[in-house]
Length: 356
Image (cartoon, rainbow, N blue to C red; front, side, top):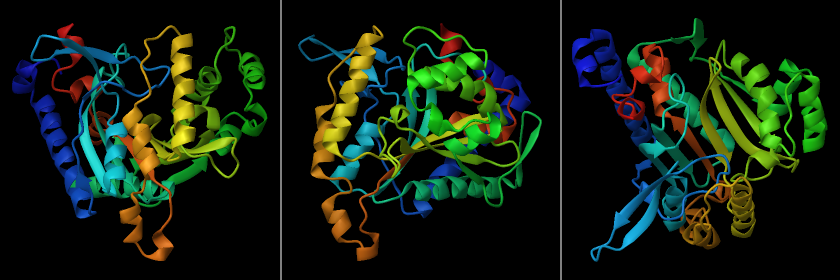
């Protein structure tokens, strides 16, 4: 959608936008009913996260004396929300705008996008999967829908969703045991065997996605949504390791071949987290990207304890576990699925693309 003229004069687009408004209202209604607290954290931050492959949007703000301060528009409210977990809130959600520069414009990406994130402290990764299923079922029911029609697929939302490990989907769709390809050198050999180019010193994650994005992702969630969980540890710098420490507690949700959400069994060990973020920072530097210090307040929040000790003390003994679960889910993509829009351009009122 490029501007208000299209919204005013095109009944189909106007209906899509009215449905968007209703879906966002229903999302809030669902989480309020589940006892979550809605939060609001800063969008402009001094020290954003350290993801090596993301490009952050800088903004220059001025103090009362005209002094200039450089901030960045966040790619996620994660760090701010985890500071709130450390302060004592245990079930929180946030719907906000996020920004990633140089993203592909069009059907699946936009530089500015709407995200919902929620966290449970305590809470296991399975709890976040349950939340996600229940959220989609709630919205479907309120909209009077049983199925989602997307890309000529009729995807059933009611009933149990699929849950498969990353090992299982590689075995099913590629026919290989991922355990044997957890080293960069071995994975590079497999990527070459399957006909893809391999660059010198290409990182594990890039090699992984050459196969995953082409041979696995388009086949995920065709009949019903699927959670793919337990990712290789080197691809999950913000999540706890599994019992098999070659893998980490992370899942992604796929519906109709479209990635909808990314979730972690959150890493709460301050020392381990700082070391991983420093490693990501060095990786950014190696890639020639802009760098900044690790967010010291975020590390301090982890040191103070998440879940907050007062929150844990108020829980029954059997519930006093240290796990924290969190997820980021794309609201624009959710609206895309529920409205039958052709692409993201039809569910966003005015894309940055239209103003450049």
